[in-house]
Amino acid sequence: MNRRSFTKTGLTASLGATFMPRAFHIISKSPSSGAIIGHGDFQFQVDQAWGNLDPSTTPVKNCHEMVQDRMGRLIMITDETKNNIIIYDKSGKYLGSWGSSFPDGHGLTISDEGDDEYLWICDNGFGGNPQVVKTTLDGREVMRLPHPKEIGEYAEGDNFYPTETAVAPNGDVYVADGYGSQWILRFSKEGHFLGKFGGRGDGDAQFSTAHGITVDQRGPGENTLLVTSRAHNAFKRFSMTGEYLETLFLPGAFVCRPVIDDDTLYAGVCWSRLKYLNQTPNSGFVTILDKNNKVVSNPGGTAPKYVDGELQLMLQQEKIFHHCHDVCVDEDKNVYVCQWNAEQSYPIRLVRI
Image (cartoon, rainbow, N blue to C red; front, top):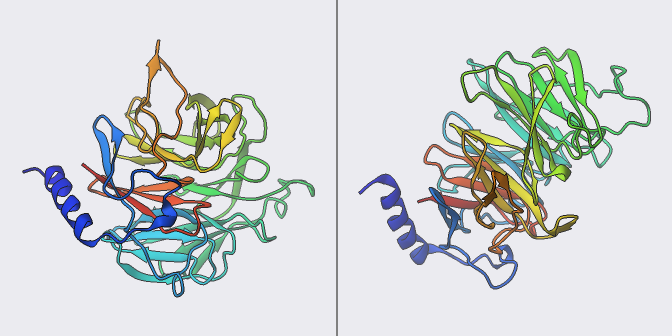
């Protein structure tokens, strides 16, 4: 029996024996824990009980993003200042928490610098204090990047609401101002400003909600940047110095940050739309692209369909998710889904089968 067959059999038994329903995850009568979702080689069993905690002691508002460290621990950011950072093991057991200074905690990136691992935290600053902060895994602040107005890159009326960071192999840090003026700001590993690109607009090299960013190291060529342009239903690819290269259009999917595991790209879809110009609330799903950037599975969504090589409109199908804000993929290819605006619920685990 292979690992996936064993996992499928074992999980079904364990869910039947131990699952306690978490009704606030279910939007209407729909598949719940134990349901099989996804398409092709990327199918998953839904585990809604994973990571449930006592909200009176370890509450969340929005489970914004999650990363995994070398030890296999899953580290999540929420905008609840009683515990901005919550740490789990892979079974969903609570290992600890810290943080009370990120009231709009949003983006979480982990960087491995050889000697140690570090977190880059984006607080989008809707409450008045946008922050991009580098910390140790236990919360000690190491660096704080400047507000772009402080370095003369934004005018007085330009908004700065950072949503995400990405760290290049050489240590350069890219900040996505996804809720603000839509620039991608580039800093050296020492925190010196190096330049910016993008900005608000509908041109190929511009963004509408530059919500996420990652370094794409797949393939034999040079590294590139993948940047979310959520309102355009797209990821846009750039060189590491900001030259526009291509757009990956994902019709109907308001995608969050791209997450790359091996040769596969995963993303949470915050919502989808029933008509091209109208977004629909509580309509999220997960989308998965192969190494050729072809959509191969939409867990919780409609099966991907191509007509004459063109991807067709993608929508939510199973009403399991509200708004999928981020995903984290472990070494067994299980996917942990963090949600925004989901009634203060904890993450959902999708177990690969």
